[in-house]
View 1 (cartoon, rainbow, N blue to C red):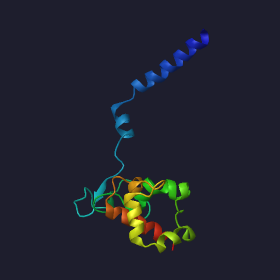
View 2: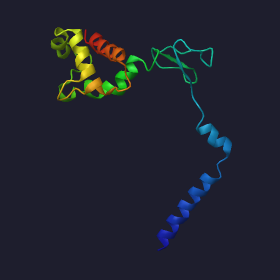
View 3: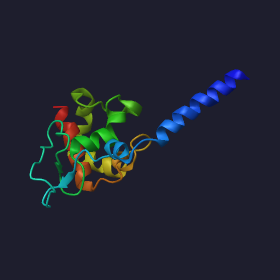
View 4: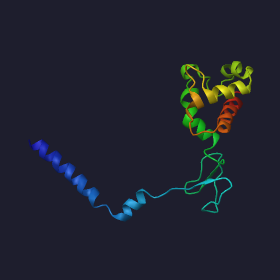
Length: 147
């Protein structure tokens, strides 16, 4: 029974400590660390970090009109299967795996990305927020890496 009382006491102390956090402490923990600007629109700051490489913390990042950059979309939607070769997906930058697909033509690759290719390739490659042009850019990105 005494172990239970000690545990309750320790948890109470931890909760009480959270209750005494100042508004400034909370604001510091949840403050914004940067801005995102869409190309062609006004940015809130004069400094703009380039998309290539790691963005500078606290500086806005310029992205392609309408959404994220190609590498970001790849990491978000394609990398899970194409980095590991899951379900027969050609591995990223593996020229031998991509060669038979590239031989069919880029239009066939675009179509299989946009429409899916049963049983494994889902429609839009799981990038449901991507436009058809962004999907084509993703295919180009993967094919270029395999050259």
